Image (cartoon, rainbow, N blue to C red; front, side, top):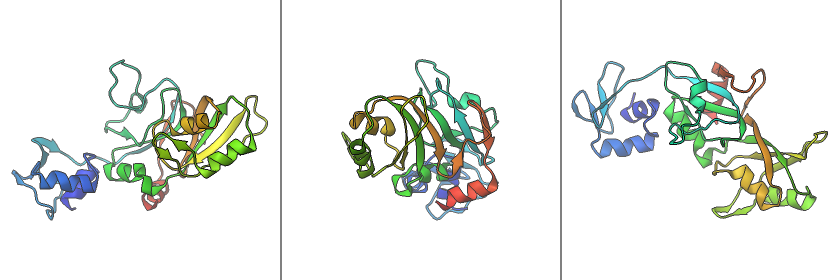
Length: 230
């Protein structure tokens, strides 16, 4: 495979980012400085800044994230991490983030190329949230969400919004495809619907059927193929 594809597979960068590392002379193949057109195999010795890189078995995990876990890999406060819940030999990382108190569908993988693609705004992966909110739900507020909401970091893309009937608390279902920090909470707060609790029930084609909080499963070959086709 091409050297940049190898670097993306081991999770150090996207292919474009890998090209920059290669051009900067930070990558060596069998002891010599790597070139953009290099082809490598499992038997080749590839190093990044002196650190040996190895291809690992690709893992694709869907986790039902419970509240009380962080999706970053380091935390000075020592809070539990979502990776603590996934007991496998390979190192996997979350694709995107869910807040400490947010529950729901979280994809983890060591396929760096796929992770970079899914997190890029141009791929527009739908994310479905169920939000318990305070404040009065009105048609005007729902219309604002459906048109896009002005936030400090710019106007959001239009969202799809549905009121979930028959709930003890006011609950709205919000579908967005951008990945801005705290986006669902911020959009709802911007229309005076502060969030009491937030749950992501779907990530793209992936739902949580059959999983309880803290449980996870491997993606099927079909699910992996469909994600790569997005």
